[in-house]
Structure formats: C-alpha cells, structure tokens
Length: 217
Length: 245
Image 1 (cartoon, each protein chain N blue to C red):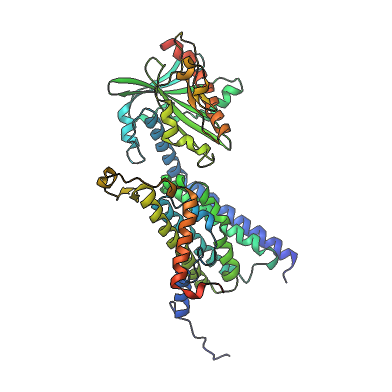
Image 2 (image 1 turned 45 degrees about the vertical axis):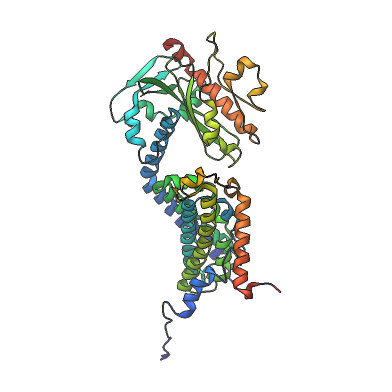
C-alpha cells in the first residue's frame, strides 16, 4: 500500500492565479496571441453587446475547457477535434438559446456572432493547447482567464468606439449637449470596423511600450 | 490506441447526450422565446405607426393603448373576425402566422390575413404586416397607412440575416423614413405600390416619384426583396381596401 500522500495543490496557488491573470496582459488572446480578432471588430460598436459577447465567450471557453479536460483521457485521439467541436457547439447553442430567452435585444444585436463563437479560434486554441493536457480545475481557470483577457480588450475598444462614435456609454449620453452646441460632432468613422482595427493597433502599441519583453527582435 | 468499436461507441454516446441536452433546453426555453417574439412583433407594428418610443419594456402597454381593432380578413376582403377586447395580443389576427398564410396563397389555397387598426392623435391608422424574402433569408415588416389607404404614415422592416451595413440597412430608420408621405395609389385610384428604385427615385418620371424610394446601394437584391414584398402583400389586401376606401 502506498503511503505516499499526494500533496493537493491549493485552489488558488500562484500557478493557478497566473492562469487567470496572464491572459489579461502578457498573454492576451487578442493583442499577443492574435486570436478572435474578427468578432472583436464586429461587436465593439457599443458597450452592452461587447460585455455580453465577452461573458458568452468566457462561459463557453471555461466550460468547454472543463468538460474536455474531464474527458481528456477517454477521448480517442483520432476523433478528438470532432469531440471538441461537438462540446463547443452544444455550449454555444445553449448560450444562444438562453440569450434569446432572456436578453432578446442583445441577442438580436449579436446575431450571427454568437453562432460564430464556435469558430472563435480562442476556444479551439485553448482546448488543444491546454485542456487536452491539464487537469479540470486549471483548465477551467485558463478558460476564464482567456475569456477575461478577450473581454477586457473588447470593453476597452468598445469604450472608445461608443464614446467617440456615438457620444454615449451603455446608451447614456455622456458628452454634454453644450459641447455639441459648440460645434462638436460624433466621429462616424468610429462606428465602422476599420476604426476597431486601428484602436486594437493602438492598444497593442501602448501595451508593447510598457512591456518591452513582448517586442519581437 | 483505441479500437474502432470504442471510437464508434464513444461518438454515438456523445452525440445522443448532446442531442438530449439541446432538446431539453429548447423545450424549457420556448415559452420565454415566444414571449420575446410577440413583444418584438408589437414593437414593429407600433414603430410603423410612428409610436417611436416603443421598446421591449413598454411595447405591451403601448400596443394595448394604440391598437383599437384587429381584423382577420379573407382573400375576397370579407372580415372574418373583428376583435376589440383586451389584451390585444389574444386577438386571432395577432396569432395568425403570416408566413403560412402567404404560403397558402402562393399554393392557391384559401388564406386569411391580419389587419391592425390603430387610433393615434384622433386619426385612424391601418397597419398591414408584410413578409417576403431578402437575399439571404426572410425579411418582414409593417406598413402603416392613412384611413383612405393612400398615404404611408410609416414603415418598419427587419431581417434575419441580411448583410450588416448593406442589406441590413433596411432595418435602419434612415431607409424607413424615406417611405413616409409616399402614396400607394395614384390620383386615379390605381394601385402603384411603392417601388424601391435602383439608382434613386430621380430616375423615375416626376409624376411617379411619389410612389418610389431610393434603393440601398450595394444591396440590390435586398432592395428588390423589399419592393416585391410591398407589391405582393399590398396586392392581397386590395379587395378589402376597395370595399373600405
């Protein structure tokens, strides 16, 4: 009988915390891993859809990571991508149905992009790179972390696009009427996808200025 | 290495579990989703009648306030059912499935049509729901007409999957506001519908410009879809309109 006592890792050990916080900055899925760009361009015109999209993606990444990690020893290697896809699509359809039932207007705005979470490279990327090789809890944290990193960027981009493009935040007027009376106009360009790309570019620039380690030699 | 038998069993079990989960979710969430669709339908009807403050949270009270009568009519223009009670959403007209009725019409089978009558600022407004096909999927909407059925008070369009920024623009006020004040009958009382004109109404002879709006650039097929939807659906209501003009 083995007397060896496997030491259980603390739930929030430094290693696990790093899984959660890494994607927020130095390992950000959008600015560093450059995954999930297309949906970042599409849903960042307003804050509300951006936040809902970020939450939806976080739920899907976290739970698909968790499920795949639970099943990882039984998944036949030859059909593993299909198994991952089935799990991801079931979760995405569930999220879509829930949005349709409880936040209908947001689900209308997100329209096809919820369905496209299935093809969001962040999810498949994390499943293959992390969940297939790690235990459920770290995988779950990795999913939450990457969802947060994606969401953080979406929110930053949406903040600037809604503020400068529509003069509102969460639909509320924040730029005072007096400024408009003095001749200020909303920048219509900010509402269009190209400005999302440029905003992301500026964020990458600022991030690399403060984190020299990210700059490619 | 896993045996083929294992792989097949694994795949089969996985798919069955997934299917069971999804069916369960679809069944449990259906009442909530249908509620949302009904509210969305009311909002569309109100928006076309220029009750512009209608949104998801106030659509039900506003619908009950402005809509005074809901009719079900047949292909000859006879009124089959007239509903004035509250709540307005229980009316047979509101429950009619326009998609099925228009399909019946295309198959030359008997069909029924809904018609909503609103009362706003002392004026009677007739609201006709519409449905048609865009480029990628269904488009639908409502057109609100004055009590002589001639002038357009407002329209509302929505789509399922038209391209955002191109065909999807039919759901934006900018396009819909073009219809306000246009007429669907000429001065002699002939039905003209409203044409969605590629290149702009400026291309039409001056006398016909009142029966046309500018098509959306980059979205010819969706614009044609709107054009056909207006003509086809309004045509089905002509018998009723002729009797009540």
